[in-house]
Length: 206
Image (cartoon, rainbow, N blue to C red; front, side, top):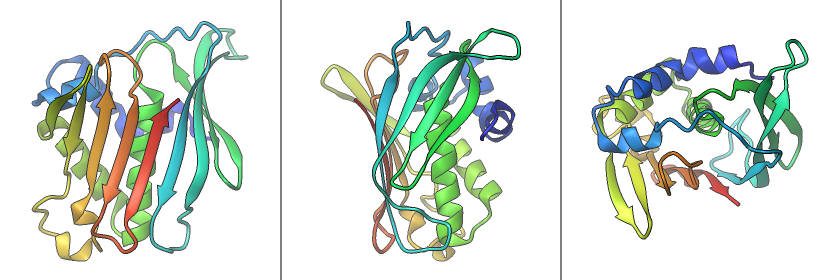
């Protein structure tokens, strides 16, 4: 089970910076908009999950998966918490707890899963991969309007000096489809068309 301490160690820098309004770009501000405190009123939010990519040890393709965000009670102190339930073609597991006060557990899950996939498929350093993704989310990206919402895109490894060793992941693009930035992210997508077959990690709110 991924405890909140693990998620914090990986991505707390992103959350802290977004709260302090020091993200350099409008795209990053939109993705890391403050969505807490969460109040699901007994409802659950469900994202479908699809993962595609090359054959590799430890990498799991997912044809019909899901991630569900729900509110629960922490038995240790009887306080409300957020919990993710991930279902894949092979297993079901719970991830959490996460605080209801702020942050976005689904975004944290998506970014960590994408980083982990890239590390497994390329053999690269997970620390280097996470740092480059963080840098892109802080300082790069672009945002465009689409209907009533917006689309934020980032290319973390464009021009990376290690591109020749990335097996096509130098083409990785992160895309976030947003409605009101304070609402849950409608779609989260990571694509690397340069890999063979192409890598895809996609989550869509139902």
